[in-house]
Every structure is written in structure tokens, then in C-alpha cells.
Image (tube, rainbow, N blue to C red; front, side, top):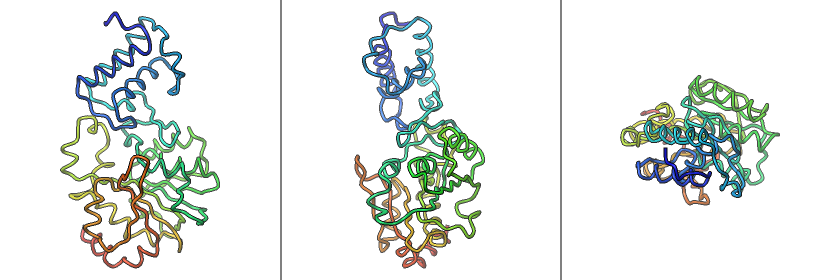
Length: 304
């Protein structure tokens, strides 16, 4: 055991250095070695994630140091994302339980949620909202948390993911969320919404095969969407008008598949969201535009 590591700061620095030397990949809730090391150290010490830096010089017991070093070794040896080790991920300022039943929460849509979906909603009044492919429930539950007057439906095909989402709904006290098991809109006949939001699978088969080992711990069902990553996005575009109110809005994350979508549907006026860190492959479109281009969208979706 390294003998010169005595404080919280010492262990955080040491973990970050070990992670960097091991060539780990980051991108599950945190995007760098220093933040993941901090997450693991504070978890092992049962301290809050926003611990005042003044405690960084606090000395650790031998038992505490041993536990932290064991977590570092597991992160390096198993290449498991730190969020799965701690069982917690932060999304839109909220703490979500996370495990291998669903992807680690990390969508840029969190920024839209915290901004009340402005300026995109404009003067629209939202009574009912839908989160398609909810996974851990992070998007739908965060919407329900920040907009307690909204009735939010959260849908997923995976029973395991829905069980995790139910735990998170209880954890965050969001009684205005309903969970549904459904293949996209299949079980939502007759349901209509003012806002539909989705972070569906959008990674190509080739991309999944090339992903670093950290991503192998996540369910493939939440990642793969065909050869161009658009199998689910096209179905959502095709079927959303039937479930949107007349002035309803659809927001979908397609990530790196943005280019393929624009090439397939160059005539469709997708509005691409600029986030604080730049473009992230999230589009906004109204029902009117979906209806106007429904024939071409249906042709492409039906061919999948």
C-alpha cells in the first residue's frame, strides 16, 4: 500500500494518475480521470459529492485508504464505469440510482430540462409530457421534478430498466410520473402529449463493436440502432404525430447519427440545439413539420 498518501486530496490525485496511466475511458456521468477519482473517494468515505474543498486535507485512516485503493483497482481491472461502482449518477442536478439495468444517465437533454425547455417551448402550455426510451428514468423523472404540474409518462421496452426507473421515481418523490412497458408508442394508443422527449438508442453496430471496454457493462439494448443508428429515431419521427397535440413538440437525441439523419431527410427542417459545450446531436421539431413530411419519413421508417 502506498505509504505517502495521507489526505483526501492525496488519494484523489493518486487515483487520477493511476486511471490516466491505465488508459481508462471516461464518459459515464464524468468525463475525466480527476472527477471519477473524486467520485470514488467520496463514495468510499460516505461524504457528499459537493464536499467543501477545505476537507481535502483531512487525513485518512488505514482502513479508509485500503477501501479507496480497492475501488481504484476494481475500476482499473474490470474497466467498469465509476457510476456503476458507486451506484449513483448525477443528472440535471439530481441524484439517480444507476446500475447495469440501464445506461448511466448522461444526456445533454439535462440542460434543456433545467432551462424549462426554453426557448423551444415558447408560449406552449404543457400538461402532458412523454419520455420515450426512459432507461433509468432520468429524463422523465427530472422533467417531473422540475415541472410538478406536468403529468409525465415514461416508456421503455426493458422490464429491468423500468424497475430501476421505478426506484428512481420513489427516490426523487415524483408522483406525477407514470411508467409504461412499451416498444416506443406501441402501448400508447390514444395517448397524446404536448411534449415528447427521447434519448433512444442511436449507436451503429460498427460503433458499438469499437467502443472501449467501459461500455460493455451497459445493456446493448440501450445502445444499438441499426447500421446507421437511426432505426428507432425514424420510427419515432413516423409515429410521433399521432401522439402529439396540434402545437406539440418533439425533441430527440441522435448523437453522432445527426449527419446520417440530415442526409436521409435534407428537406425536413430539424432545429439542432446548441448546448453550453456546443452541438450534441439533439433536434427539435414541431408536429406541423412532421405532418408535412410524413410521407417521406414513413417510407424510410417502413423500410427498416
